[in-house]
Length: 153
Image 1 (cartoon, rainbow, N blue to C red):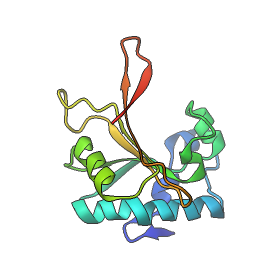
Image 2 (image 1 turned 60 degrees about the vertical axis):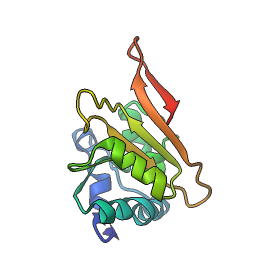
Image 3 (image 1 turned 90 degrees about the vertical axis):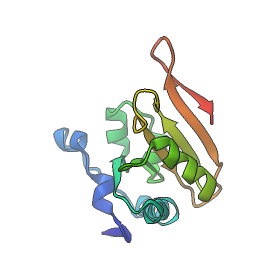
Image 4 (image 1 turned 45 degrees about the vertical axis):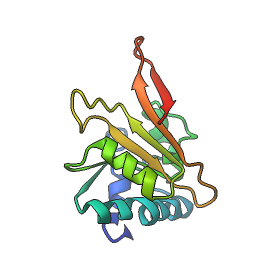
């Protein structure tokens, strides 16, 4: 099933963890509706602008899969509203800044980006809500104790 011109449902539901653990990662109609909106309003415009392939490292996750991965069942991935992405040959800082400046989004997180080591390090988490978008732009990093922390970008 196509969600937009360049994105299919399969890209958002495939999961090695789900396969290994026999978890059915099939979204409901409401979750598919949310995925379509994420694609139409965020991911497809990113693809159209940069004109390069996008890697979706994490898309939809059913509650069971999300818990298996150690994440909260309240995650927007569970609702079909979020994806972790990278665009080939584009730094993740450039990608997140472009989304922030040009698109409507709910949450945007530049995750574990270290430009001194590699401009392509980390990834970009982006979500979209069909209700009210918060325009929350954050940066995730590890502190000295190795715990994940967030700061406003």
